[in-house]
Length: 142
Image 1 (cartoon, rainbow, N blue to C red):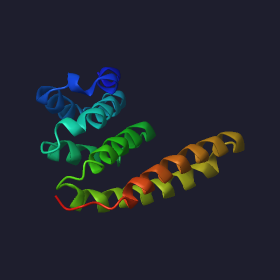
Image 2 (cartoon, rainbow, N blue to C red):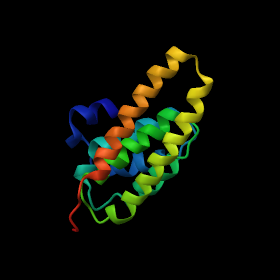
Image 3 (cartoon, rainbow, N blue to C red):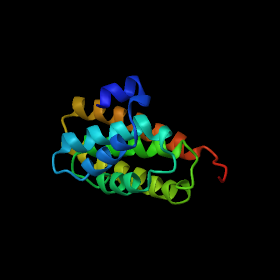
Image 4 (cartoon, helix red, strand yellow):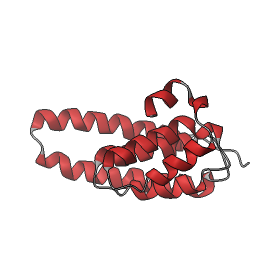
């Protein structure tokens, strides 16, 4: 479903949104991250129906799995770009998430072999930079 909605977001309807919003709460990490990506791919189709998705995505930013956290952050970033009523609370939440993720990565990088650490730090720095760019966009009130 993630690949299909990346290629053609219009394949999704409200039933898909409801389904992937619910599957964000599943135990399996793969289901969590794929659901988050579907939401990120299709959020623009449902700008007024994202409240439950946002709640579940924010919960997943606390998950122990990096891919789950980053997929949730991707979806939240896509929602933020829509400049909806949710931005009032979403923007501060994403700023906090970004700060926590930086601290987590800094701690973990100390434990990795140096070559792997450099690659992972570069990837994280690029991701954090993209989040910061998204966060620095001035949003108009709806």
